Image 1 (tube, rainbow, N blue to C red):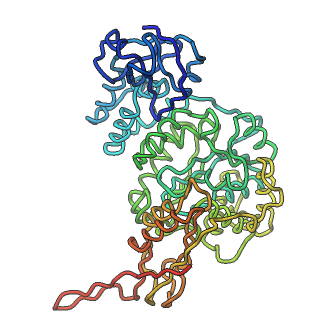
Image 2: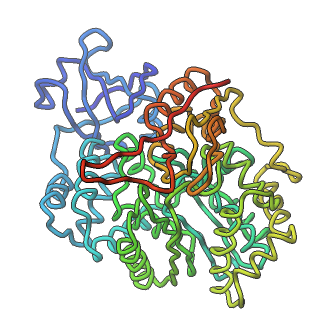
Image 3: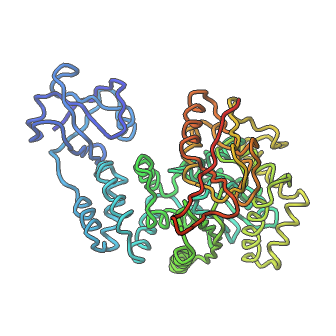
Length: 514
C-alpha cells in the first residue's frame, strides 16, 4: 500500500502512523495494530485509524519518522501487512532460557535498530534478561553485536585507557577526578559516560552542569589528543547507538539487567579503542552488588570478557554501603567533585577512592606506586589544572571553581529528634528522595548529608538538607524523607533481647525547619 505523507505535528513515544479507516482492510487489519514501512526504509510501526483527520490514501506521520525516512510533506511511503519479526521468536527463546547463537543475537539487535520490533517487545526481552540472564557466550556475542551498530574511534596515539563505575551507590562523583589525574600523568583517557537510568545522577548528568558533553567522535578525538582526556556523554555520538534505544526502554522499567550492563559497558569501551580498563564495582546493601561473593564473581566476569575482547581489565570492589561524599544530585555533585579537586576539607572518602582508582590506571600504564603518585598529582593542584583545561576545551570556564556552581534555590533542613549514632544508610531511599526533589532532570535537586555511618548525632542537629529548583518537588521530597527515614539513628547497642521478648530500637525521627 502506497500512502501520501501528511504531517500534522503529531508526536508519539512509540513509532506510530494514522491512516484512514477504509485503508485498514487492504492491510488485513480490523483495528489498531502493527504493520511495516518497507519504503523508503524498513521500519515496524503501530497503526491507528481515523475517518475525519485525513483522506483515503493518506497517512499522518510524526516528524521523527519523517526525518528517519527522509520524507517531506506529500512524500510517498509504502506499508505492508503486519508480519511477526524473527526477533519475537528469539525473545521467546530467551524467556525460556534457551541460548541464542551469534547470528540470532545479531538479529535481535538489528531488529531493535531498524524499528522492526515494538518497545513492548523490547521491554519483554529486557525483562527476560533481568530475570534469566545470559550465558558468557551470549554476553560476548551481545557485546560484539552492539559494537557493530555504530562507529569505532581510532586515535593517532595510544594505548587508550578507560575507567568505569557500574554505579549503584549515590554520589559516586569521581570520574572527572580520575580522568584528570590520569591525563595529567600522561595517559590517553577519552572518557564517555552515561546519564542516570534509575539513579539520581549519572556522570553525564552532573558534568553538563559545568561544560558541554554532547560532541561527535571527531571532537572527542581532537580534545582527547590535545588534553589527554575528555568528559563526554556517550549518547550524543554514534557509538553503539542500539544502547540508546535499549536505555529508552529500560528507564521507565527501572531495571538494569546485568548482562545488558556488561555488554553495554564493554561495547562502548571497544568502540573507543580502549585496551586498558579499570572497573569500579561498589558493593553493599541497596547497590547493584550486595555481597562480596557476588562482587568477586562479577569482577571475574568482566576480566574474562575483557580477555576475550583483547582488553586488560582490572576491577576494584569498593565500599557502597552509603553515598560517596555528602552530595547527591547533579549540581550538588558537580560542586563537590570540583571541591575535591581543590582538596577541600571533609571529602576524605572521595579523594581516597579517586586516588586509589586513578592509581590503578597509572600502574597499568607502567608507573610505580600508583596511588601515592595519584595523590601527589591531586594535592599539588595539577589535577585541578588539567580538569579546568579539559572543561575549557568543552566550552566550560577555564577558571571554574566549586563556588561557581549554583544549586537548587529552595531547601529544607532535616533535624534529628533523638541522639545516637548513624547505624545504617538506605541508599535506595536516598535516591528516591533525590529524584522526588527533581534530580537528575532538574539540575538543582538533590540531597546533602550532614551525617553518615558511625557518626555521632545530637538531638536537634542537622542530618540532611534537601534542595530543589521547585517548591512543590521539595515538599514531595520532604514527605518521602519523613516516611522513608533513610538514616537510621540509634545507640551502639542496636538491639536488646530478654526472656520476655525483645525490644526493638526505633529509627530516627525528623522535624522540619526552613
